[in-house]
Length: 112
Image (cartoon, rainbow, N blue to C red):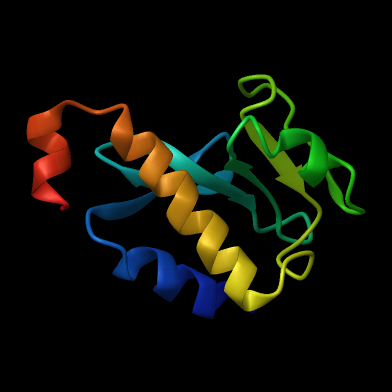
């Protein structure tokens, strides 16, 4: 998936906003980041993951623990091509859902 198609997908998710942090493009819900991509570094990105999937994910080529992020909760992926389009979209939606689940119930209800 190219970066523009990916950006359009993320911004179509309810409540998603974009911004820049640490020189990287971030996608957020209620100002809470669920995806960060280094568009100037071959589109490497970090995404929240289910801790139970962490070991299986990091055993795959092109995926490792995300630096400076919660241990075993965020992975760093070499580029957008590591996952096929279907898996990438599924993982983005799951990351967003994990972040949303930590927000107050009233906030969650806005995006249900």
